[in-house]
Image (cartoon, rainbow, N blue to C red; front, side):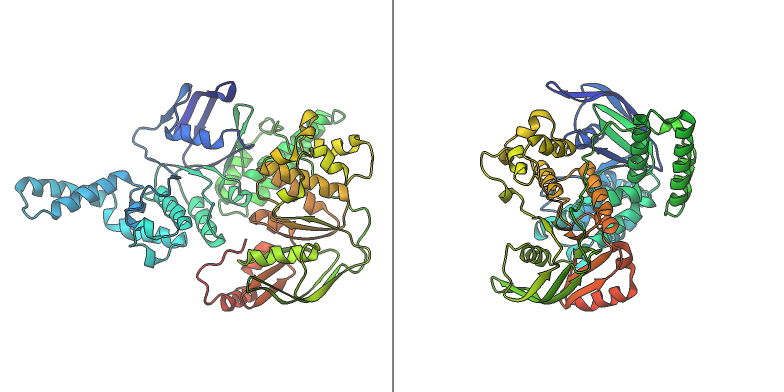
Length: 545
């Protein structure tokens, strides 16, 4: 068990944490969430002892071992990959090295013999005989082939080094496991392996992640960092979000009597509890939720942008016809004779490792690039709004956010534009900020405001979730689910793709796979698996999102 007692930390006038008291107990996985800059990673560093708080202390049950996911990817360049993993269990690794040193001596003294016997006992007790096979099994699960296990770290790719360090943190069944963005650089298969591993992990896990699907899969609790406080909630990310939004709605609605509020909240808890019962952690999670009282559900003070795309007109019967579209760039065939019919109600997620093909297709459909051959036709009543991957090029020098959006507004008065900016969390003088000084997340929110103003009935998004925090991703996710029109998009966010798309189109080396289904069902489809196995027979690694 690990406890934060009266922990406070400030940087100058900025207070990150003030008198935080929270207890993390075995058998649970705690997801740390909060807006960008709220201090999620900093809090993990306080728990690990890397940063000293201004006040308070971190208390760990005596004898318990804590590991963290290290970020120094080049610190182990001279070591063998398997050894780097075993280093996660520091005591075992020290015993292994001392044992090897004694046995490598040319002259073996009586003292060496006594010490060797002691080390053999420790080695067996700590699981030394199984260490290399356990480490190899973890590396395999995280997508690192056996052929690399004996190589030095400097000989493998940087994205694989991150996976080795993740295996290092997991190795040896630590009592407390701290993970900061563990799904970064992992493909879907490796993420699923990690989810299964953590769901069966019986000790304490504390994780920071922007991956909602991952948080929903592994977390039993959510710790929300907000205004220097850390509020603990039972349930996964979706439960935290839905319950806090419901509580916020009811707090604002003064006409409802308290009894009606209680009845609605009780119904919500019961409904969610039934859904949780289908998950892998059914028993433990259901017990946690069954213990909830109405007073446990509180509104969050976190600010979510409001994203809603309302078409100015309906699409009609015909949406988009793509006929024999081809494009070669720098000698590479990016699109090859692509033919598709996109229907008015389609919400199409484009997946597959060829990310460039998706971007080129979107640019052609948006009129930013000409195909080499083939053509496409938009329906007569369609209107298009496009979110490019590189949105920085949309903005001019010395242009304020308000000035930029005014050109897309149907109203001359900037009050109308200001209302959209307020929805996207640009209030007061923030609406006058120069577009060129905006952060990546702020730029995305401005482009989304532009698209809302345009009122199109067909939307194309090229990786819209990049640079967004969890709140903005959730708001965009909800907005696209509710949108009454056609959507074509790609994203690295599993839950975003699964919850928005009703059609999956995958670019493979053998052409496209096209299915009317959501993403999770697509991944489980036996016919799709067979097609993918054939298409990728010569490909070592496939990154779908």
